[in-house]
Length: 204
Image (cartoon, rainbow, N blue to C red; front, side):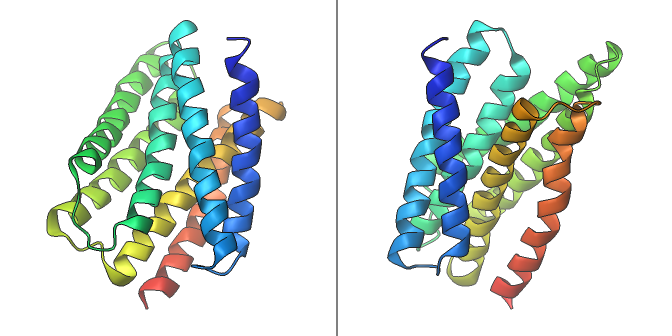
Protein backbone atom coordinates (compact mmCIF):
# COMPACT_ATOMS: atom_id res chain seq x y z
CA UNK A 1 0.00 0.00 0.00
CA UNK A 2 2.85 2.39 0.87
CA UNK A 3 4.45 1.72 -2.51
CA UNK A 4 1.23 1.73 -4.52
CA UNK A 5 -0.14 5.08 -3.38
CA UNK A 6 2.82 7.27 -4.47
CA UNK A 7 2.85 5.55 -7.87
CA UNK A 8 -0.90 6.07 -8.13
CA UNK A 9 -0.60 9.78 -7.33
CA UNK A 10 2.36 10.34 -9.67
CA UNK A 11 0.61 8.56 -12.53
CA UNK A 12 -2.52 10.64 -11.95
CA UNK A 13 -0.55 13.88 -12.00
CA UNK A 14 1.24 13.01 -15.24
CA UNK A 15 -2.02 11.78 -16.80
CA UNK A 16 -3.68 15.10 -16.06
CA UNK A 17 -0.81 17.07 -17.61
CA UNK A 18 -0.74 14.83 -20.68
CA UNK A 19 -4.51 15.12 -21.09
CA UNK A 20 -4.18 18.90 -21.11
CA UNK A 21 -1.46 18.70 -23.76
CA UNK A 22 -3.45 16.27 -25.89
CA UNK A 23 -6.56 18.44 -25.78
CA UNK A 24 -4.69 21.65 -26.58
CA UNK A 25 -2.45 20.23 -29.34
CA UNK A 26 -3.31 19.73 -32.99
CA UNK A 27 -4.97 16.38 -33.52
CA UNK A 28 -2.88 13.75 -35.28
CA UNK A 29 0.37 15.63 -34.78
CA UNK A 30 3.37 14.27 -32.89
CA UNK A 31 2.67 16.09 -29.61
CA UNK A 32 -0.95 14.95 -29.57
CA UNK A 33 -0.02 11.33 -30.24
CA UNK A 34 2.84 11.29 -27.73
CA UNK A 35 0.85 12.97 -24.96
CA UNK A 36 -2.09 10.67 -25.67
CA UNK A 37 0.05 7.56 -25.41
CA UNK A 38 1.69 8.77 -22.21
CA UNK A 39 -1.75 9.55 -20.81
CA UNK A 40 -2.91 6.02 -21.62
CA UNK A 41 0.04 4.34 -19.93
CA UNK A 42 -0.42 6.54 -16.89
CA UNK A 43 -4.03 5.37 -16.77
CA UNK A 44 -2.72 1.81 -16.91
CA UNK A 45 -0.54 2.58 -13.88
CA UNK A 46 -3.49 4.18 -12.09
CA UNK A 47 -5.60 1.09 -12.76
CA UNK A 48 -2.90 -1.38 -11.73
CA UNK A 49 -2.39 0.44 -8.43
CA UNK A 50 -6.07 1.21 -7.73
CA UNK A 51 -7.21 -2.41 -8.06
CA UNK A 52 -4.88 -3.88 -5.40
CA UNK A 53 -5.46 -0.86 -3.13
CA UNK A 54 -9.22 -1.37 -3.39
CA UNK A 55 -8.82 -5.06 -2.57
CA UNK A 56 -6.50 -4.38 0.37
CA UNK A 57 -8.94 -1.83 1.83
CA UNK A 58 -12.05 -3.82 0.81
CA UNK A 59 -13.26 -0.76 -1.08
CA UNK A 60 -15.78 -1.94 -3.69
CA UNK A 61 -16.51 1.67 -4.67
CA UNK A 62 -12.87 2.27 -5.67
CA UNK A 63 -12.73 -1.11 -7.42
CA UNK A 64 -15.67 -0.27 -9.67
CA UNK A 65 -14.48 3.28 -10.33
CA UNK A 66 -11.06 1.90 -11.32
CA UNK A 67 -12.64 -0.36 -13.94
CA UNK A 68 -14.84 2.49 -15.17
CA UNK A 69 -11.95 4.96 -15.46
CA UNK A 70 -9.54 2.57 -17.11
CA UNK A 71 -12.08 1.41 -19.65
CA UNK A 72 -12.51 4.97 -20.88
CA UNK A 73 -8.78 5.35 -21.50
CA UNK A 74 -8.53 1.87 -23.01
CA UNK A 75 -11.48 2.39 -25.35
CA UNK A 76 -10.23 5.84 -26.30
CA UNK A 77 -6.88 4.36 -27.25
CA UNK A 78 -8.48 1.49 -29.16
CA UNK A 79 -10.71 3.81 -31.20
CA UNK A 80 -7.66 5.92 -32.02
CA UNK A 81 -5.74 2.92 -33.35
CA UNK A 82 -8.50 0.76 -34.82
CA UNK A 83 -9.33 2.49 -38.09
CA UNK A 84 -11.23 -0.47 -39.55
CA UNK A 85 -13.90 -0.52 -36.87
CA UNK A 86 -13.61 -4.28 -36.32
CA UNK A 87 -13.64 -5.14 -32.61
CA UNK A 88 -11.24 -7.71 -31.19
CA UNK A 89 -11.95 -10.18 -28.41
CA UNK A 90 -10.23 -7.79 -26.01
CA UNK A 91 -12.58 -4.99 -27.05
CA UNK A 92 -15.62 -7.18 -26.36
CA UNK A 93 -14.28 -8.22 -22.96
CA UNK A 94 -13.52 -4.60 -22.05
CA UNK A 95 -16.92 -3.24 -23.05
CA UNK A 96 -18.64 -6.09 -21.19
CA UNK A 97 -16.70 -5.25 -18.03
CA UNK A 98 -17.64 -1.59 -18.44
CA UNK A 99 -21.35 -2.38 -18.58
CA UNK A 100 -21.05 -4.84 -15.69
CA UNK A 101 -19.24 -2.21 -13.62
CA UNK A 102 -22.16 0.14 -14.23
CA UNK A 103 -24.64 -2.46 -13.03
CA UNK A 104 -22.39 -3.10 -10.04
CA UNK A 105 -22.42 0.62 -9.22
CA UNK A 106 -26.21 0.67 -9.26
CA UNK A 107 -26.38 -2.32 -6.92
CA UNK A 108 -23.87 -0.68 -4.59
CA UNK A 109 -25.83 2.58 -4.79
CA UNK A 110 -28.91 0.79 -3.47
CA UNK A 111 -26.88 -0.62 -0.58
CA UNK A 112 -25.39 2.80 0.18
CA UNK A 113 -28.82 4.43 0.03
CA UNK A 114 -30.21 1.94 2.52
CA UNK A 115 -27.29 2.82 4.83
CA UNK A 116 -27.80 6.60 4.39
CA UNK A 117 -24.46 6.91 2.59
CA UNK A 118 -24.55 9.92 0.24
CA UNK A 119 -22.02 8.27 -2.05
CA UNK A 120 -25.01 6.54 -3.61
CA UNK A 121 -25.42 9.70 -5.73
CA UNK A 122 -22.10 9.47 -7.64
CA UNK A 123 -22.64 5.72 -7.95
CA UNK A 124 -25.97 6.31 -9.66
CA UNK A 125 -24.41 8.89 -11.99
CA UNK A 126 -21.33 6.87 -12.87
CA UNK A 127 -23.37 3.71 -13.15
CA UNK A 128 -25.56 5.39 -15.73
CA UNK A 129 -22.52 6.70 -17.61
CA UNK A 130 -20.82 3.29 -17.57
CA UNK A 131 -23.87 1.60 -19.04
CA UNK A 132 -24.61 4.39 -21.54
CA UNK A 133 -21.04 4.74 -22.79
CA UNK A 134 -20.50 1.00 -22.75
CA UNK A 135 -23.67 0.42 -24.76
CA UNK A 136 -22.68 3.11 -27.27
CA UNK A 137 -19.33 1.40 -27.79
CA UNK A 138 -21.05 -1.99 -27.91
CA UNK A 139 -23.26 -0.77 -30.77
CA UNK A 140 -20.23 0.61 -32.59
CA UNK A 141 -18.49 -2.74 -32.27
CA UNK A 142 -21.55 -4.73 -33.27
CA UNK A 143 -22.40 -2.61 -36.30
CA UNK A 144 -18.75 -1.97 -37.19
CA UNK A 145 -19.51 1.73 -37.56
CA UNK A 146 -16.49 3.08 -35.67
CA UNK A 147 -14.76 4.42 -38.75
CA UNK A 148 -14.17 7.92 -40.03
CA UNK A 149 -15.87 10.64 -38.01
CA UNK A 150 -17.66 8.22 -35.69
CA UNK A 151 -14.34 6.63 -34.76
CA UNK A 152 -12.97 10.06 -33.87
CA UNK A 153 -16.12 10.80 -31.89
CA UNK A 154 -15.82 7.59 -29.87
CA UNK A 155 -12.12 8.30 -29.31
CA UNK A 156 -12.86 11.82 -28.12
CA UNK A 157 -15.75 10.80 -25.87
CA UNK A 158 -13.83 8.07 -24.09
CA UNK A 159 -10.57 9.97 -23.69
CA UNK A 160 -12.39 13.01 -22.32
CA UNK A 161 -14.39 10.75 -20.04
CA UNK A 162 -11.17 9.31 -18.66
CA UNK A 163 -9.85 12.83 -18.16
CA UNK A 164 -12.97 13.73 -16.17
CA UNK A 165 -12.26 10.72 -13.96
CA UNK A 166 -8.72 11.93 -13.25
CA UNK A 167 -9.87 15.50 -12.53
CA UNK A 168 -12.55 14.13 -10.22
CA UNK A 169 -10.04 12.03 -8.30
CA UNK A 170 -7.73 15.03 -7.83
CA UNK A 171 -10.56 17.19 -6.50
CA UNK A 172 -11.97 14.51 -4.19
CA UNK A 173 -8.57 13.79 -2.64
CA UNK A 174 -7.27 17.35 -2.35
CA UNK A 175 -10.29 19.59 -1.76
CA UNK A 176 -12.36 19.12 1.38
CA UNK A 177 -16.00 19.97 0.79
CA UNK A 178 -19.29 18.74 2.18
CA UNK A 179 -21.15 16.84 0.95
CA UNK A 180 -18.34 14.85 -0.66
CA UNK A 181 -20.48 13.70 -3.58
CA UNK A 182 -20.40 17.22 -5.07
CA UNK A 183 -16.80 16.83 -6.26
CA UNK A 184 -17.63 13.38 -7.59
CA UNK A 185 -20.36 14.77 -9.83
CA UNK A 186 -19.36 18.39 -10.59
CA UNK A 187 -16.57 17.75 -13.16
CA UNK A 188 -18.89 15.44 -15.08
CA UNK A 189 -21.68 18.02 -15.03
CA UNK A 190 -19.38 20.79 -16.25
CA UNK A 191 -17.32 18.96 -18.88
CA UNK A 192 -19.94 16.65 -20.41
CA UNK A 193 -21.64 19.53 -22.30
CA UNK A 194 -18.23 20.37 -23.79
CA UNK A 195 -17.92 16.77 -25.00
CA UNK A 196 -21.36 16.98 -26.64
CA UNK A 197 -20.39 20.26 -28.32
CA UNK A 198 -17.06 18.86 -29.49
CA UNK A 199 -18.72 15.73 -30.84
CA UNK A 200 -21.20 17.84 -32.77
CA UNK A 201 -18.27 19.59 -34.46
CA UNK A 202 -16.52 16.30 -35.24
CA UNK A 203 -19.63 14.63 -36.66
CA UNK A 204 -20.74 17.66 -38.69
